[in-house]
Image (cartoon, rainbow, N blue to C red; front, top):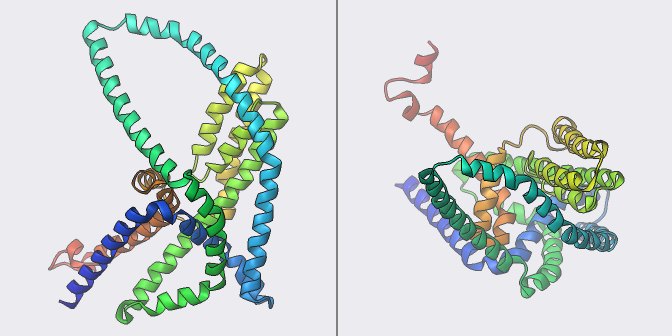
Length: 360
């Protein structure tokens, strides 16, 4: 009965937590962002604390340096990105028109080869799929818009996030020790082990993958700019920053970059160089950056990450996007733990069979 009460207690707590996140998601963005910043920077503050700097001073120094780097980054890149976005807006209609002229004859031949019944079914199916996709996309974008672009949230993100990050960084050890003292003592070891696994997964993914994304963004942006690709800086930074989902950044960058290159250049050499940049970048990520900066103990499959990001954005807006990876990491660790316990239980071996019988 004691176990049942605990199960009901934790299930009720989980339901209450999800309900509160859903109800308060429009105002949670600066707090979630502050928590993630504090989690990301905690190891650096720990190192400064070990050399004799107080934790409060170390937290202030790290956040100030981060703020200055971000401000300098924005001051340097925003004018160039704004100019490239305007160039792309002028360049894009012509590229779409050229693509349409190339594809239209092929499409007409394909349509002409279809029977009237098949054509009707295709049109009906396409209309249904397009309507559902547009409805989902509209809901997703509106949820992100309401969660991140509203004026109040922008102001609170700028003003509240640094304060939340500072106080959490300063009191991180105290907070974690206090939470640690609340765990049930009889299952403390099991809970502690799972939390350490979650922390290891998050640390490897968030801190490591963020480093990978920044390195790839710099490589792609510089290489595409040197080649002379229009909006190369914009495409390179975008491809690098979405590389936290393996293969997706290089794939999207390759499609967008090659599309622009095919329309911009009349010779094949620069077009091939654009393709080679993303090929080299993807191999650099797979065989050097990810093994060294992320490691092989993350355990988060790309499909699971994509699903988590889409589900989080759909349910909780941009706050859900920020929470998606930590929640996915926690669920992944708990699922692996549950499967391990199941494989060691009588539910797997049966009442009359145990592991000793199997090994014999």
